[in-house]
Image 1 (cartoon, rainbow, N blue to C red):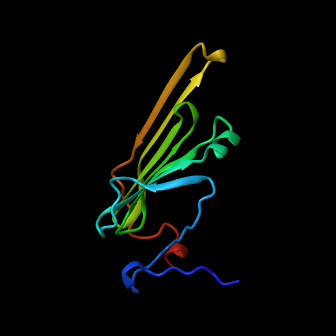
Image 2 (image 1 turned 90 degrees about the horizontal axis):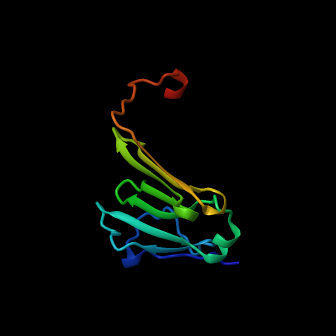
Length: 144
């Protein structure tokens, strides 16, 4: 069997490809309108689960729905998940002193009473800042 191969657009042989995806089984992936391939830009991909995937899932399942990556570092800046009845979870990342860290998390869910007579809506936001990193490893074996 001959493996699939892909050429770089424009014949640029120095560009690196981390991943090539030819098919996502559960999602329809599209570039968002604000997505950019500029070196200092951000790649923004929206992911919509196919209907057959949602039908087989429980009501508490999360599905990827949003991915934003920094084109310079190639690291995710934002990963979003969604589920039924407004269930959502998102994590935002940043780089501090060369270390990739979580700087924000968001969780949102609505719980319904039996027969949907009443509901409780909860939103949790957590912001992280003032990161500090030791100059030496806490365990000397980690410095090796």
